[in-house]
Length: 363
Image (tube, rainbow, N blue to C red; front, side, top):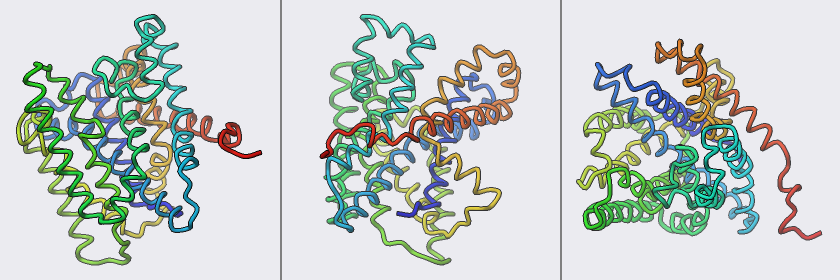
C-alpha cells in the first residue's frame, strides 16, 4: 500500500508544530509576547499538532484495515499485534530512560508504582495525577492506543456511512464536553487543568480520529482542479483565523467555544488535508526530502523531544546561549531531536519483533 505523500507533509507539520510550541514554553514564552498574533499561533501549535496526529492516526488505520479487508487478509489479532509492536518498543524504552536517567528517577519508589503501572498499560491519560507525570507528552500515547482498540468497530461505521459516522462523532464529542464541563466539573469543583485532561480523552476527541477516517474513506481525485486548490487555500486561511479568534484559555472552558473549538478545527484541517492529499508530489526535490525524512521518523522524534530539549536547555551552557535567539535555538533543537528520533527508530523498529515474539503463531 503506497504512502500518501500529502499526508506525510501533515505528519511533518504536526511534529514541527508540537516541537516549536514546547521549545517556546521551555524558553519562557518571551519571544513573541510583543506580537500577540505570533504568540497565539505558536501557542496553538500543540493543539494543532496533536489534532493532526489524531487525524492522521485515523486516516492511516482506516486505509490499513480497508486494504486488508479488500484483499480478504484481515485478521483481528495480527492487526492489533502489529499496531502495538509498532509503538511499544520505543515507548517502553523512553519510559526506562526518562525514569533512570533524568529527575524522574523519583518514580522508582513506592509512590511511583502507580505511575509506572498506568504508563505500562497505557491508561495513564485517565488519571490527573499520572497524565503527564513521567513525561508531559506521553499522554497522547494512551489516547492513541485506546483508539487502536476500537478502531475496527469505528472502521465498520465509517465504511457503512462515512458522513453520518463523522457527524455522529462530532455530536458525541461535543455532548461529552458539555456533560463534563457544564454538569460534572462545577459540582465537584475541578481545577482548570482537568478541563484539558478530560477534554482530550478518546471520548472527547473521537471526532479527531473519525475526521481522519472520513477523509481516508473519500474517493481519491487526480489532477489539478478548482475545488482541490480552493480547499487548500480557504482551509489554511480559516485555520489561522480560527486559531486567532478565541482567547487561548477559551479552548478548555465551560463555554460554547470550549465545546466546539477542536471539532471546528478538525473540519477546517480536513479541507486542507483533503486538498493536499490529492496533490501529486515529487519525492526527490530539495524541499520534500527533509519533509519526508522527518515524517518517517516523527514518532521517535515525538517521544524524545521534550525530555531532550528540557535537559539541554537546563544543562548545556552552549544551548542556553543559543536560546537567546528563539528560532536559532529551535532549529538546533529540531536537528538534535530528529537525529535522536532517527537513531531510536532504526534501533527499535529495525528488528523483526513479529519473529522475536512468536506469540499467536503456530509452529
